[in-house]
Image: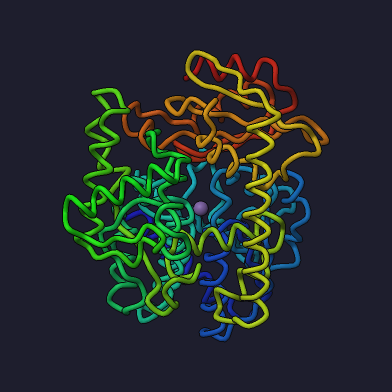
Length: 473
Ligand SMILES: [Mn+2]
């Protein structure tokens, strides 16, 4: 951790302790990282016997900021959001005559790139970028919340597991493993025995899908195995013969031994070699091999064991507006909440399947020089899953897997845009889609941003937007 962030954390901790008996509100984001931030802060409050009101915020902007009763609270904490809107928060405080008024403090615990602005000293901004540390890779919102909890009491390392899940949710292990502060947080969780880390294959669904299904949907490199079960089964059969193994493609990847995984991985790698430009070959291992993270306390072969799959379970609820279910499951309340989560997960999968079928059969993929895009009709595909669907669209033949893809969906006012880019492309061409979409949406009076490989925007109109994307890429 850098010096500035350390200082910010100390100030934040001191402020919480000073205001522990007063009115406190905690606002968090609604994705996996936001919900895990919330769990950490709720748990912290419980242990410190602090009462607080908690609120989920889908977005922090002028309007939602308007709804927050600043004057009613002596302390407001924002987690996994707030840095991008730090000047807006400052302006609001000024508007309510709270600028510099210590009786009404605000703490922002975030990892998004901060907007540059002068802020009052009763607004404490904790953010890794203050030390020039990459908040996109080194720590997530839940990680900052965890650091805050640990700064309140160093023994609270059992909360580290939530921060690791938050980081997986934000795909901060993009290169295959964690770096920077995420590494330290992971160490805390490992020392506690809460999280397991081990080398693995980078196929999705290691505990819940037969391995041939995991391989069927692998889209980071397009080979002749994609969407072709009989070729995959053959591929495994040949490996079995060559290495004298008895791998059953109907078993999930988690049932493979380390040696079997290595063999499948290296055979798959040489298969992929034939399908990528020569200059991309060196990045192949990074998309095929990587670390797996698992909750040791969860049962194997359930959707909660692997952190990537756990994050999908959270999305299966939160993307449709249900934040309560994942929150309760995370806190350990299973039973009806777990059942509801499984029900939502099933529905989510069916929705994705339906959406993909719609894109395959009814939507035209429009090719531009450096990217491609498609448009979604108003009543098709829920807004919350447009980004996920854009990512999955790489399993469609018409989609060029060597270019980023933009999905544009009409909404009441304007459009929602989601963009995705295959991992291999981010490594090989150093594309930053988040920058691109932020630039293009600003040009048309919209707002957008996100990660290098996954981002989104809201824009009033789409025509020039497409050109701005073209120019910037
Ligand atoms: Mn986040």
